Length: 211
Ligand SMILES: N[C@@H](CCC(=O)N[C@@H](CS)C(=O)NCC(=O)O)C(=O)O
Image 1 (cartoon, rainbow, N blue to C red):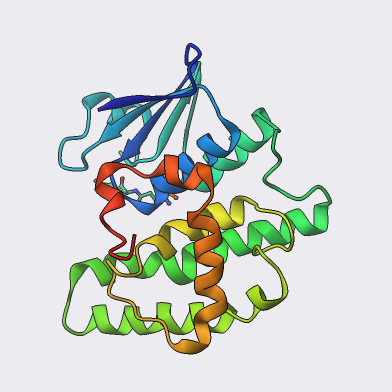
Image 2: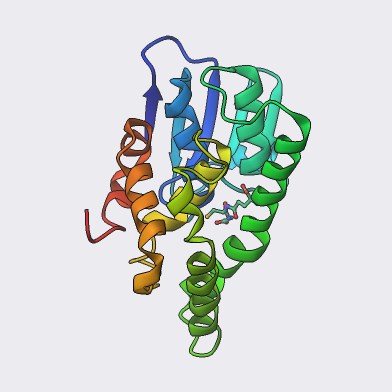
């Protein structure tokens, strides 16, 4: 399925998985910035043949902007933030930018890396991965008593990166303890953004049983 973000003629194309959290990150960025983009919704079981020519990893998300082909959701998202600077989704000063990139890397290495084990439902690895994710999210929860978003008062690419996991907690069967309430309040702040609601595909809408 192909959908258009914004009504003007698109110059960019995003190959986006129907429900994977990496593609979801990039869709949130598209809608935050109201970017003209043709979104090609890809079922991972039926990938278009051109995807393998565009991306040696044959993965979603993959973005084409004229002659430029990008893959890796964080790389795509930073490119979009620089190409269409409003609203800015990264801090301005080098130290804060470096810290934001470090967080993006840590979310990938510490949490996104657990998702294949969780989805495998493997008897030993899935419960262990769920516990690591639950404990990690619980540890960062107190941050959201002090500030509305991960980096402080401003919504950023770091929030775009975390939101898809938070949306899928029911689907991943990860139960957060009571002390993670500030994190759950933060998740609600993210889910109520217009960009987040627009970013959801039909397949993703049903992944959060509470909504
Ligand atoms: N590190 C990549 C990960 C992307 C990724 O794992 N995408 C999955 C989504 S399902 C994919 O396309 N896997 C290949 C496949 O399903 O065949 C990113 O941040 O974009």
